[in-house]
Amino acid sequence: MKWSWNPCRRNRESLCLLASGLLPEADRASIENHLAQCVNCRCYYNEIKAVTAPLAGWEKHFAHIEPGMAVQMRLAKTIQSSARPKFIHLFAPRIILFDFWRHLIWPSRRIWAGLAAVWIVILAANFSMRDRSPVVAMKSAPTEEIIMAWRQQERLLTELMGSDETRAAQPPKPVSPQPRSGRRFETTAV
Image (cartoon, rainbow, N blue to C red; front, side, top):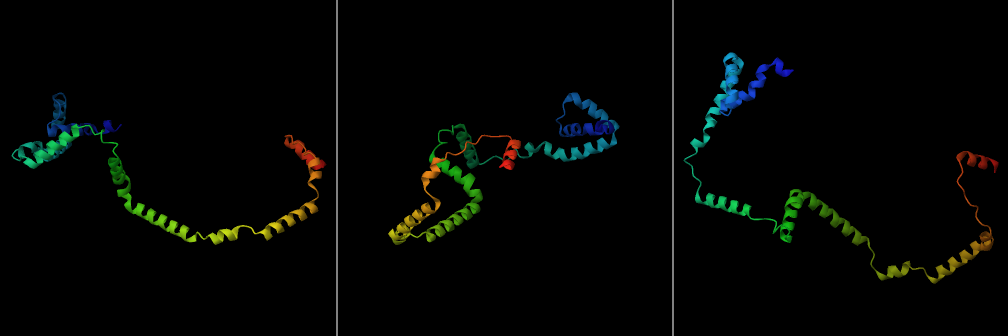
């Protein structure tokens, strides 16, 4: 739809390529015909040509500049090092630790420092609350008097509840699953 309303929009990219000198010869004739007929596209082409003309021959302007010997050596060293296989030293512990530090720790070092401070505070609180004296361990063990009182309370409780033999004589009722309607009837009948 948009193409039919504005036929010049189709030619914008081709006009840019024509202005920079990169448009293929096959498309050049149709675009030049359109330029001869359309004033808006001609203005657009002239604006693009004014911007791209100084940039078209940029390599000619910098032909006199040659890199120094240090730059050439650094470039040669970089090319040679990229040609070497890197997987040989990939699993060295030093490389792994350095990568871990560089990618995980260093970008978020404030967060890691905050977490470390919180853990130090937690450990200090934990150690300060712990009572390490052997006297406290001896105090927490039940004394002989407490054990005797507990056994006496246990005997009194068994006398009040009755003997355990009578309870063991009655077998428990087996529970079988029933539908809800049956359970409701059973609870109302009892």
